Length: 288
Image 1: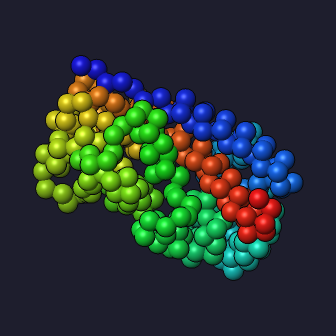
Image 2: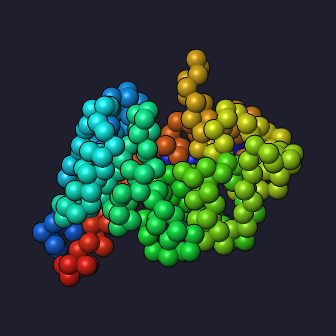
């Protein structure tokens, strides 16, 4: 048995094409252009690469690139003032503060200044609360991308025994809540879970976001299971995930590669969130 490899690039391309078409229709209907304000503090090379990809995708989708770049020594109050100004700017549909911020700054406090209606990363406390209560709101991009991949490959979630390995605020917890919202039966595992492999073997759907390279091997995967690998680690052999890809592909039914699986979905869902935020603002202003 060899797993079907989930093509995250193809699914992300479809989402981005749909967003581009919908942005054009939105602009024609409202006279407004959705705008994404990315905020980068400092010159961390990895963060600059991530922001660059988001900005290019934004422009390709027909949205306004409203990027803000501040020096690493910018004080907390000045960054807060910028975020406050973006929060009330009608040209700004969504705000994304690139994390981590430089040492000495309180990233959580800065993210907290982003209003939930412009929180396209879905990370603020109000956004987390809306997700927890199952109320409409902007959802975190990577978890939303995981659900999109599962839907694209017709993975049955209702009633499915599902295991999420990892309990981070960025991926583990929100994806578990999204899965519960789809009526999956979810178990969350972490570094203190006893006999992790045995727990994972009971899952029809296994989402691995542990941040530990190759923590999941063949013995932890139920034959025919769908395995979503969120991890990304730079090694001498190239990028690797939290799942031992070569071993697990022999037993899984569906499997995401690293790279080319979950990664491309994050930017695609960011674009979708920005459009959703723009639509919501237009509804408030009675433009749609």
